[in-house]
Every structure is written in C-alpha cells, then in structure tokens.
Image 1 (spheres, rainbow, N blue to C red):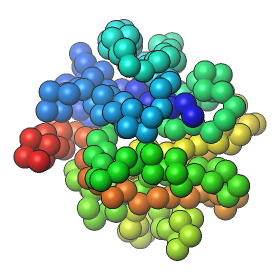
Image 2 (cartoon, one colour):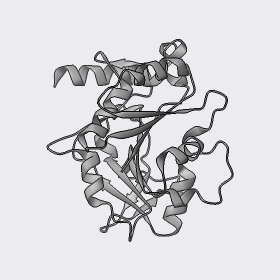
Image 3 (cartoon, helix red, strand yellow):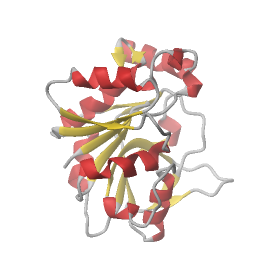
Length: 233
C-alpha cells in the first residue's frame, strides 16, 4: 500500500507563523509537523508516500527531498488550491488503483502500544469498506473545541452527527481510502467530506478508535499546548 500526506494547506489560523513557513514545516518541540505524519507512515511499514504542496511549496519540496528512508513523490499544486479532496484526486495517478493511506499534516497522532496506521491496515476490509477513518474520542482530544464528527455503531460503521448534537468521535486525520470513490467527480477544489459522504451513503464508511494521544495544532495556542505535552511526556 502507498500513502499520501496532505501538505498543501494555507495554515491561516497559524498566522503569523505561516506567513513565511508552510504549516507542514511549523515545528512542534523542534520537529516539523509533517515529520510526525511521516513517522506514522514508517511505523506502518509503508515505503512510498506522495506529498502535495501549494503554499510556499519550494520549502516543502526541499524538505522532502532530504528524506532518504522513504520514496517521496511530490504532487505539485502550486498553480491551484484544490482543498483536500481535489488534492487527492490530482495525485491519484501517482497513487495507483489500489486503496491507499491518507494522512493530514496538521495534527499530531501519538501512538500507544501499537501503530495506529498499522492497526488501520489490519482492520481494513475491502469487502465491507470504502473508507476507514482513525477516530479520536472527542472528549479526550487535546486542543480541540468542536462538537466532533461522527457517531459509531457496534460494527464500526460511521454516521455523521446532526448539526445540533455533540458526537463522541472526531476524525483523527489518518485514513484508508478506496480510489474508486473519486469516479465521476469533476476535477477541481472539493473537500474529502464529499468522499466520506459518498461512502456513508453506501454504508461503507467505517471507523477505528485511536488508543493513543491526539493533539490538534490549529492555532498558536494549541501549538503551545501540544509542545508542552510532548516535552512533559
């Protein structure tokens, strides 16, 4: 299986840090955010990873070129801002026709006794699933102020929360995706939520609870909080 790390966002909520540094290269405890995601790829035994870039793309490109233990392929989005779904769609020729792992680079997923991405790979069942999301318990999320994303039934099937309710789980930024879900979607900017909704409508959107720690790094305050937690652990 191949992997892709999403690294093309503008990082507006982390301004002014992201004025001259792309969000994936903002450091938490001396380590760029993207490297935390790449560690998950390594921990799962995946050797080939696509990284997309847009904002301050030259810096992202220079950073990944220095990685020697992974085969990193760049998906260049300098000329267009495609959001998460559009970025993945553009990279599909580099990812192939098989299911692939997809990771965000704006959160820090800290594993417990086992690799979260490896656990997803073990739980992946293409007979039942089109998307398998790593889910974080909303009340245990660090630096997160939202209402969560999904309810999960006893089989792991996900149902998006009603706007008025608090959901017990939020998407943790790590997933496995069947590329067939992108068929028939026009090229351009769109969110991966469109893909999730497609899978949910087919009864093929599943989740796996994360048993480690999850740190949201959405703004400067959350970044400082994440840094204190990592330094204190």
